[in-house]
Image (cartoon, rainbow, N blue to C red; front, side):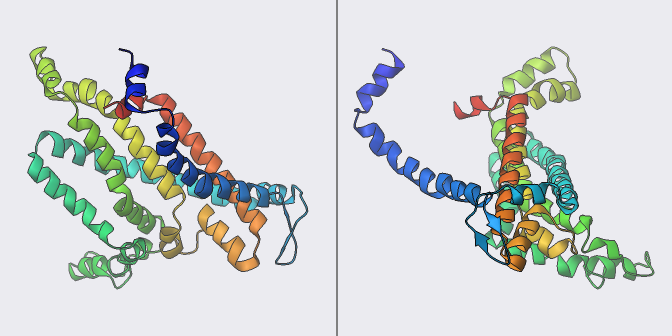
Length: 292
C-alpha cells in the first residue's frame, strides 16, 4: 500500500483543511499580514513626525545612502556572527561531554542548570551583569583585592565584552540543545567500528562525530544568529551607546515617528536573516532531522 493511500485511509478529504486551517490562518494573520503592512509602510512618505500616504522610494534611498546605516549594519552583523561562533565554541564541548561521558540523568540535571536562567526575563538576565562587570562590581573588587590591578577595568562594562558575555549567557542553550539532540542519535556502534579500524579518539571525533552532528550545529547557528541579530535589550543596556539595527529601528520610531524608515530597516533585517538561513541550509542538509 502506497503512502498516499495510507494517508487517505487515515484522513478524509474534508479533514485535512480542518487540521491545517487553524495553523494556516494563524500564519496568515500574525505573519503574512503584518509583514505586508510593514512592506507598504516602507514606501510611504515621512514628513514632520507623520506619515503621508504618498508612495515614494525616499525612505529606501535615505536609509541605504546613510553612512550611519552602514556602520550600524556592519556592527550588528559582526556581533551576531561573533555570538554564533562564541556559543558554538562553548556549546559544542558541553553537548559532546553530556552525550558521551555523562549518564542520561546527570545530563538532564546539568541541562537544567543551563535552562534555569530562562525562568527570569531577558531584562533581569541582562541587568544581572551590572553588579559583576561595573567598576565597583565583583570582578574588579576581586582583582583589586588580590592586588592584580591598581584601578578598575573600565572595558568590562558598556563594551563589546559585556555585550558578548550577555549574548553568550542568553543564547548558549539555543546552540547546545540542537547539537545535543543530534548527537544523541549517533549510533555508538559507529564509534566502536572506528576504534576497531584503529582510529584514534581524535580521528573518530573528527571523521564520525563532527560530520554527524553538523545538522545540529547548523540549526543552533540559525537560532543564535537570528535571535542575536534582532536582540534589542542587550545592546540597549550594555553597549554604552553603540547602536545596532534593532536600536536604530527603535530610535526612528520613538524620536521622530519615522515609520517608513523603521519599516525599511525591518525588511532589510528580515531579508538578510533569510539569506543567512538559506546559506546555512545549503551547506548542510538538515531535512533528515525532520524525518527522525
